[in-house]
Amino acid sequence: MTPPACFAASYQDVRYRSSFEQMLKRVLKWLGAIVAVVVIALAVFIVNLIWFRPWSLNLFYEKVFAEVVFDHPELLSTLGLVEQFGITSHNGKLDDESPEHQRREFDRWKRDLTQLREYPLDRQSPSQKLSTHVLDWFLEMEVEGEKWQWHNYPVNQLFGVQNQLPSFMANTHRLLTRKDCEYYLKRLDALPKKFDQLLENLKVREEKQILPPRFVVEEVLKEMTDFVGAPASENILATSFKTRAGKIAELTEAQRADFQGRVETAIAGKVYPAYQKLTDYFREVLPKTTTDDGVWKLPDGDA
Image (tube, rainbow, N blue to C red):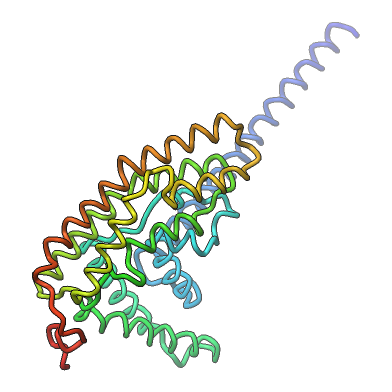
């Protein structure tokens, strides 16, 4: 090829590359603008969904459900709905038993009920009207229950926090992977905080003269004394973990032994002291309890 021809070819090549680069920049600019618009729209949608009333009634139903389950990690673990999507962090947490959390929950029920009633019934399909009526009934019952929120016994001999938690850990907390074992330990470590919140809740009831009947306190004291009376290695939290962790194929024997040791250490160092603190509290209130069992003994119990 002659020098002029080479020069012409090189010139055309440079022009082609320059045009291509300019076109590519324009395409990337447009794509960037589209992505930005999508991100902003998604952000607006999520903000509206979480903090305000969703535009879609069906999304509102789902929002109310999601608010409940994601605010109660133990319930979310029981349902087992989100693990398939890789969402597992809740399996390392326990429910908040504090009075403050209880107050926030009632505030949420009130907000949800107000927002639900902002959706005009005449614009809803028959199935939506049915769902709206059911949800309205549920939310109204929850809101009306605020004045009676302290009229129960969260620690009792049948289904109290102190006996439901070991059962939950032994039978519901999933143990399929190494990470699940770590979550198990996190929940054991979180138990003292949960029981401190429970004690705070119980003391609010005590201030309102709401104490369990004497026979309930006596049964609970016996139950918790027996629970902490066995060596950590013989506690249901340790024995159930050992059985189920033994079926996790990805764990070596050394890893199983390490986890088992950590579980027993947490039981002795975290779980038992928390139960002892709860036991000490009920021993203190036992003399204040009475035998006139029934709803009528509670404030406004005759209402």
